[in-house]
Image 1 (spheres, rainbow, N blue to C red):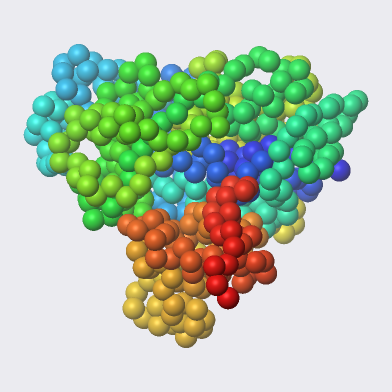
Image 2: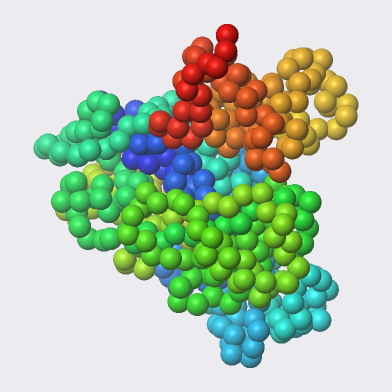
Length: 477
């Protein structure tokens, strides 16, 4: 019997679990995927928004501002890469400048500092590679970039260290509610809980229907991205948005927190929530839209493309409340942009919804809200590298050449509390396979290490989700 069952191991579920984990509650997080951060949280822009674009007074606006203010400390506590790089929303006409003025006014009414509208000469001083037909820009000093998958995994790791259980590959089939107990039926087993928190992302409306609540719909909106090599990551210094339209924030260009260049996404409503393919015509559209911002995009330096699917709510705002149809069932749905920016604040918000549901809730005497501050081997000084190798000679073996990831780091990622069990799980925790060759050199070694550490046959090692086996049989003995 669990006090709380959280459905969904994306960034929202992870931060809710972290906020709740410091209390004397028996909690589990379940996800149908083989790992955390395998939905929208693992495939987005990784931007911490300034908070000026959401409608003032909405949950999106309130929680974006609170979350952004918390983010630097949260990332420091959880050893998550974070960079306060600022952002520009660029305009190509006086009509678009009016939109910037409205955004600035809205942001300042919300208490956001560091907003200013700058002209072409100052824009080019900050960003010399932007096109000269950009005439105005809204500068936001508080915008930042993070690693979205690292943020999710580390928040859930923190929760797990505090006692939260994580069940992988638990697909929810149905939910039954008795007088005061939920029975969550999964394809593995039935779980009993007093409170259920629905953080199922693009599937949140389907989970909500299982308890008779059809008060909202989730509109899946796909967005395709182009990721370019680190050698061109300095094309821009800030997050560069085009003036937003009713379709969204549009195609952006940004350096990632790991140094790559990212372009995208488009925004297309899709019918099938499971589709994550990229398409040549869409990628070309993203590229062409990016050229409007800067004509210096070196497309030949692209190393991969990917698709994320956003959970756009029919209500126009975040849905965070106890269901009116089912007591003690909390919907946390419609977490499209700025969901990532809002995640820490959403965790605290849901904690305050949960507290009244337990009359005797008390804090644990022993808990942590931090993770050990570990450096990537690639970021260590020469002396730090020598010391690391002296303590553990596995630091002396580079497995991923592109990202300088060592065997020690891969082994550590497998033996975390919520450790990697797949090649992509290792990738999200260490960046092995995220470089220029996209795993061309390191894949066989990562398979070997996973098989050795998990004590399984190499043929059982999977790349991504369930069924993604890499090897089929031996070709020779």
